[in-house]
Image (cartoon, rainbow, N blue to C red):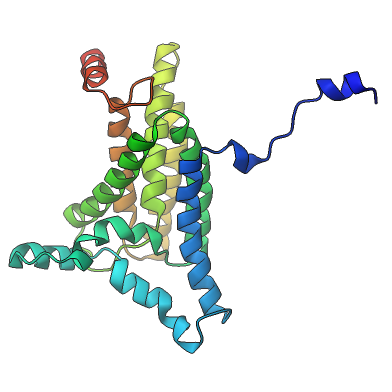
Length: 237
């Protein structure tokens, strides 16, 4: 092979080097907590007491509707309770959920981070996480503790759906394909819950998905929040 042929070959760039740092950090944060719990369960660190780390993490950082309602009714607000609507994504129920979350967060996080600045990206993550938790409280009577980063993942998918729909509309194409992936994944979540039973955690993910879509209205082409672009888009709706 000549030097000229070599120069014409496309440069191979490792996948993780193409992911914006903020998206990569988010995915790694979700994955790191699961590695910690999984390693403890396999006896790699922490000793015998480490077997209960996941349970302790769930009770300490998981989101609980009764806890929120009790806190509001008593008017007693403590940091360890207030943090729960923000912290529950970092405690997964198991490695399968953590793996699915990691994969979706890497893909959808890369998509979102390439279209917005750091502050809007962090705001998107925080808001969709909180809206997911509040949807779980408002639309279910579940007393189970909500955990897992799928709310974050679905929030990112909501933003993905908005921008793909916006692009399709601009090009005069159907907007339905933009919703196929998010609704397909959410449908699987709902079907598995109905078939095998369990807690309706999908409600939280649906709330995160919807809030991620709505927040997409606020982001302009420069990747910043803009009330002007929101007014324009609502005017065209």
